[in-house]
Amino acid sequence: MITIYHNPRCRKSREGLLLLENSGKTFEVIKYLDEPISEEKLKTIVKLLGLQPLELVRKNEDIWKSDYKGKDLTDSQIIKAMVTHPKLIERPIVVHGKQAVIGRPSENILNII
Image (tube, rainbow, N blue to C red):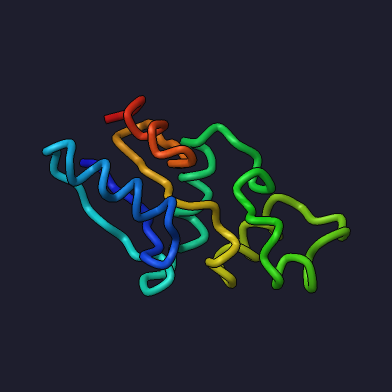
């Protein structure tokens, strides 16, 4: 099953969703601002992406700048920050089986579907 972690307010996320809709494949949409991602699930996604948690953070978000920037944070603290403030999570994220990509640019999604 293909899953897209989607934020409807984000243009790049909408582009990724459109790409999946046009692919003709079956997929699930998780609006992660409405349905928060658990800490365990986010850890799994980070591992599938092959990234360090900090690489998944949107560092230009105000909440990051005000509460986290410049602090020496552990991976676990960064994961907890993203769970607490899901706006910090890069988007869209598409997971297919044991593979995942950040859909920026949306063409990255084609690599796993």
